[in-house]
Amino acid sequence: MIYLYAFTIIILLISFISDKNKTIKGLKVGFKKFKKILPSFLKMLILVSFMLYLLPDKVIANYLGKTNIIKGTLLGSLIGSITMMPGFIAFPLSGILLNKGVSFMVISSFTTTLMMVGILTFPVEKEYFGTKLALIRNTLSYLIAIIIALAVGLFYGEIVI
Amino acid sequence: MKKFKNIFIPITYLIFIIISWVINFQPGIEIGTNFYDFIKTMIGILPFAFILIGLFEVWIKKETVEKYFGQSSGFKGYFWAIVLSSTTVGGAYVAFPVGYSLYNKGAKLSIVLTYIGSAALTRIPMTIFEASFIGIKFSILRLSLSIPLIILTSIIIGHRFENNKSLNKTIPSNK
Image (cartoon, rainbow over all chains, first blue to last red; front, side):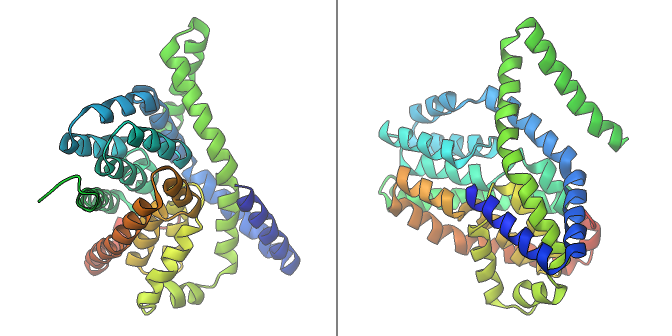
């Protein structure tokens, strides 16, 4: 994160030295955009806070660790779609699951949908790109995640055609 | 009505959390803590992201975006979209406003969608995390499978919406 701060400050300084008025205008534009999307962000956070309560990582680990590979993959993709968690939680969790004997295919369906399919980020996505496009994008992302999971399963020899 | 809804939901939520604290209602307290944890992360990212978006809006010319990400950018556009996405911080919630700004400056829809899709999967810090916890083989396999699939589906969606001519109705302007 420190890179983001350093980068922003450097860009801001360069911008300010080059053209003070333009920089102020840019900050105003950024602020206005932020204000406009803020209600959607709040909605998203409220949804996230409920979802994390209903499905904390321990419960997820429990669910994914106990089923067979096909059920696990489907369940993993559903949980991944409806939850949202930062990578620094999701990947250590995946590491624990792997050590417990959960297959790569299940891990793949979980992490890929977690990152690509966003039911909780839907309020934000909808604001920018409209309901229709957001729906289609998420549906196709889900399909991509399933295809990747199948390929991972084949690659690791976890499923056989 | 929308304005009312925008205020009503967060205020109801806030009251729920406060009451939970007062009467020591455990689920409510946990939900409030989850909210706090997430908003802390977002406050660390969003203001900076929107400063950069604002500066992007005033400094970067439409022609520049069109050249690299526009209709005639060809395959290079997808390449640069993926490079840009790997440096994106945060997550989808940052990729959406950035993608939207790109789109309004003349980037092709399918390239914007490629950017958003690959921002979910190729961010550098995230990939390092993935490789170290699940394995580098897994990361390479996943990246080499997902990038072509993302480009392919982005082209399909982009084609559909751009041919539709109802694009301006579908995608709200001036956000």
